[in-house]
Image (cartoon, rainbow over all chains, first blue to last red; front, side, top):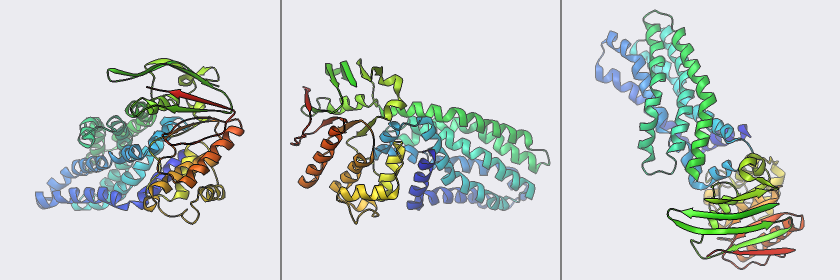
Length: 219
Length: 204
């Protein structure tokens, strides 16, 4: 059941590849604009890199948030999901996971390559990928709450960013912090542990909150 | 089995209907009639628990449906105004996925047979977006052939269907009633479903 939701969303993503690629290219372009704009000052680029990559990741994962539930809402499949004999929070978890597989995982994979533009060390690149691996699922999970709350509203896309971006701040601080610490030669494990804690907390709480929001939105 | 008492629906400031009472037992068919805007869809959405009544209670086998929740969902199939099919998936994928989401996993053969019976033979693997409105409706209705739920709540199931398909739906509904199923539906079209007990509810 849970697997069916993931399978379905992945199948749909495969059929509408443009959506997936938009997110990825947005990320690549935003990250690449900074070295071009700031100029080839290596030290400055290196100190900017964690923040730039992370902010771009937040924005990229937000681009596709609105679509998470709205297309299902419009064609009536969401209604059917609400009537499923499975707990709704489990379905929401499935949808958030599918969203992460489609938008988060490509970012994790491409980020180390983009990091080279900022002259990050190998260690820092590795930490960057690990921090994104822990952080991007949190973005999808928190984003699910925002997407569920703004479902069916006019201008939902803008509203969802206003709702969700402030909630992303802790992830941004510790995600970028981990990479900064590593490129300054310090240990990043404290930052990564906190990211892991965010991930666990949002795994437990976000599906439940998003399910409650969906019930309200659909009524 | 399904018992509704003192149901009231409020939209904004206006009360659409109040003091609606009825009960449905195994094998019974109920048709909800009323002009546009009289609250037929609202009533059906309340019956499946998608929206909350302003007042009154809906009980399934003696228990309030709010307290049953997922257990209740195991016994109902709701087909609304929206088809609930994905444009980019084929009819076959749509049927298998929507059945699985309703807690009823079916294999490919069963899905093929259901679609064939709905008159979609040869179009099973085409993306639904290239099908006509009536054909999409048939994809949705194919779920009725594979589901094993007791209570069917159907909101205008005959919209966009041709007369042959209406006859087909009628026979599917009759079979369901014969097996002891229950149906609540709204329609503006003429359909004569033979049932042991036929109830009509008029909303104004």
